[in-house]
Length: 106
Image (cartoon, rainbow, N blue to C red; front, side, top):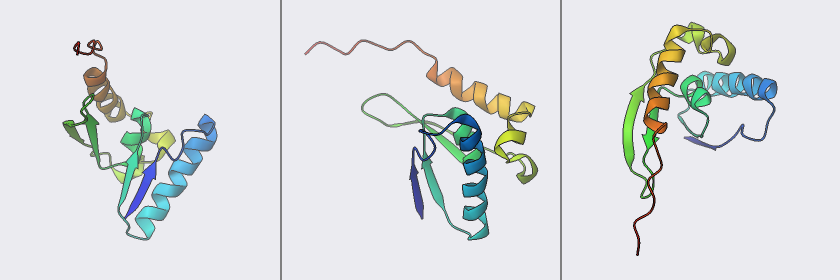
C-alpha cells in the first residue's frame, strides 16, 4: 500500500503530468495499491479507480465516483481530451462548487 499525500502539488504542470504517468505505471507494474490524496480533480481522475469526495468539517465521505476510464486513456494528457474525463470532472466539481456555509456561532 502506498499513500501519496499531495505528491505533485509543488510541481509545474508539465512535470506533474509526466510524473503522474510514471507513478501510475510503477504502481500498476508492481501490482501495488495506492491512495492518492489530492485537491486536484484532474489528478484524482487519472490516478484513481475511485474518487471519494469529502464533506467539510467534520470530514465524512460525501460521495464516491467510480472512474471507469479505459487503460488506453489513463495517460494524464490523453485522458483530459476525452468526454468521459470531462463528465467525471463536471460531476465532481458540481459537488464542490457550492456556497460555503458560515460556521455556527458558539
